Length: 266
Image 1 (cartoon, one colour):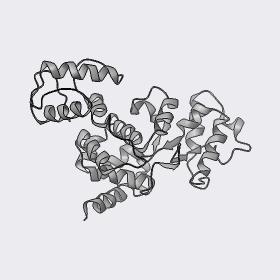
Image 2 (cartoon, helix red, strand yellow):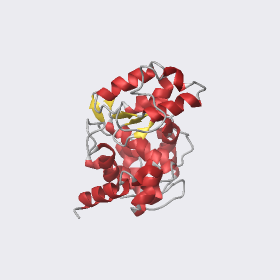
Image 3 (cartoon, helix red, strand yellow):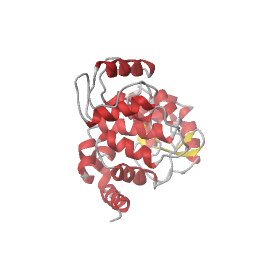
Image 4 (tube, one colour):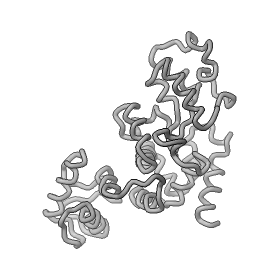
């Protein structure tokens, strides 16, 4: 969606008015951003904790599109379509990322327990970043604390929370930053790229709903410079930025292409 303001004209303005009306504002349904619309936008921004400047940019669009809609247990087709419209990408591309990240499973293991995977090598580095010597804590914690990535310690499912809680007993913040969260598996240390003030608020948001996980993931994709690659379906470029240089080892780009093709019926 384009940024729109007083004097703007076109289909985005008409769509914004449609969503303002859905949220209880009395605006006409023309395609002109007039003074009455600006007043409504400022009021909406204030009520939703946004900068009240009367301009509809990304965060105001985000709130406008998703507020006032019932929050269901699972993401709906409408959720994916609205987010794709906001980002300017295909819904099938977003679905492909989600399918590859969690194998098509949902964003929760159980109510209030988002899908996670704890990374012991990341925990090692996060402790070092805080001036904590990880070697002091290795004994008895070999399954959650190691200097290099390895697969042998993953337990999967709810048992990942056992690993997380064990790490939290050493340092909660470092532990939460060392797990990937939700249906798009975003690492906790990326909380700032999701426009969250702390990893604590990031985790709280991830616990809310699959829709909230989608919203945070979209922010991450946008702020992390991955959106152009997602729009172009340049899967190798997207995989590099989303998962790092090791993506080739897991054929992440090929998995994304295959998942996208499946959603497009190819």
